[in-house]
Image (cartoon, rainbow, N blue to C red; front, side, top):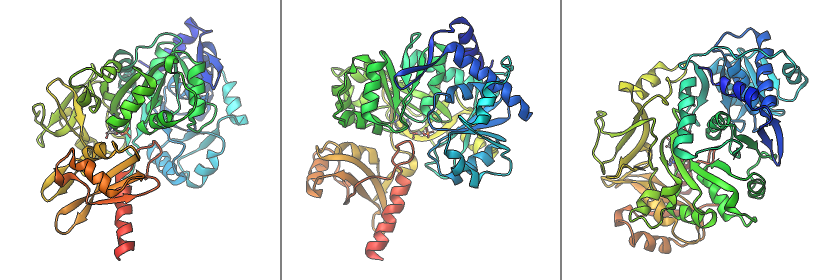
Length: 506
Ligand code: AMP
């Protein structure tokens, strides 16, 4: 079944229900949104695209983003949403690799893309241009038939480890992801809003779908930037609002002095990176029992485990600290196993790679059979993440295997050390890495944003973790390297650390 049917039906049955919000205002109702998508689909016909061909969408969060996405599906084509903040050369790679002949782009981004556009790209349609407006006046067509296993969204991974790979998400995958959200994260009622403050090309874009299925309102902020003042204002404007945010964004809201009233918030969902327990506590103090966590990846879109609002808020539970430090329990629709090197299940408490299986898992990587075979070996998605279940079935994520520090033969998980350092009241951010060392193999180095002395930090570590885990060196910096989604890039930090040492000692 084609996902586009959700919008087409909503447009017919509930034409006047608000569908898209732009800042404070209702931008389109379901009739208008459905009509736009059907016209875009009709307009795309002139390019003679075959069913399943890819159409790229390189745009900042724009109120027409969702009409274009659904227009592409409506036409029986596959969408390639790419992060608008990427460099032109990175976008050029995605355009070439996906083989997209048509690309929608926000005004201004066309200049960034054009010098890197591959020869396969035939048309760059700027949103809001005369050509785009003409598309919107094309005759609407009926939704084209699609099977559940057909490609819907080519999801380029954020590339924290080299070239991005295109995870092939099918209509069926996305339907499961949408239902999983409604069942396990955030029961949504008609007219419930969701605020898309993070890029729609990534995680929050997946949450468009349950909100279309349930007749919710997808709201985009007016300014492209993440401004706590504006976010809080929009929370006040849209009662029962939910929002997905990276932990760094939640932290900015918590630290902001902007006037805020959490009562309107339905659920604040964090994910994409770990949120430290100290930060969860502060967020709970500010927002109350309205926080939930998701753990997923492009290959299993936002859907591996989830920590419910109830679990996050249950401060009286004897194992609450462990639970809020975990990534929660598996979603109903997916099997999750912690496995040894031979893909055999490990008992609770033992650390291994996280594998998952189910209808939400990608069909494979676009044009990359080797990576597909490796990642989906034996029918299980090999996430590359490392973790352990506890006896109650909660999954604790350790660091990615390549971030693990091995010092003097002992394994040290950076996150454990980071959790401790963050308890210092003047430490704002921290990232712990391993530095190659002739004697120890690696030594622990902490990069710290904040005001503290190495002595104070050492004391903190000595009071809570084994001696061998405490950093040998502290480096105080103004900021940590992050990617466009606000994730700290340990690979970049390790390179920076190596370069720094060369400068100092070379
Ligand atoms: P991406 O595919 O770019 O969304 O990156 C997915 C990766 O982000 C996962 O494989 C994890 O390593 C990390 N990640 C996602 N959600 C969480 C979470 N809730 N806690 C810790 N790490 C996470």
